[in-house]
Image (tube, rainbow, N blue to C red; front, side):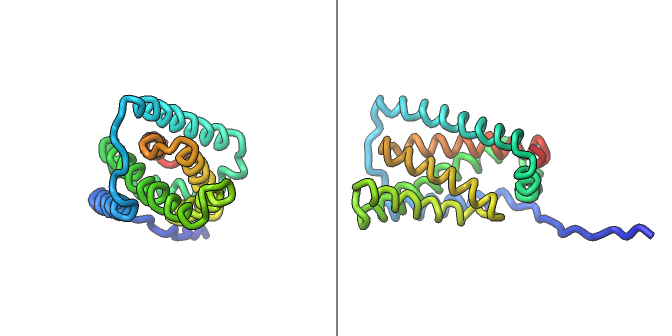
Length: 196
């Protein structure tokens, strides 16, 4: 007698719900960070290039980890299946918009506001900077964490983004990095039907 075990259904998430959430986060981060605090200069082009290169390097690193650590991958596949199912009905343009808005909103909130805010209290020395980067990265990971392993991956990504922001002072660079990384990852998840 073969009994089929019912698996829980993973709902598809609405594109408009994601857009509204990301725009809300962007506005919250923008307001809390005190608005745009710089002026666009030609030197920003190098930060755009760095952002693109760091996004590609981050995705390549994730791909290499995924391909070389199969036991870890088994655990991660469940999380990726959830995300893949939620976005599977969206087209690539919708995924690109989500990626761009995620980069913009989350970096405004976690780097431009939270990391800078904490640094204002903890000091701009090495210890104060480290505290601010770690706390902002924990918040970033908490927003994304479906499991302990996924939390760890996003925490590490948050540390990298936070440290790069601290060293460069360029919010533009980490927005570009995060946005392009998300676009690539979302489209890859969809194309592979969550199985990387």
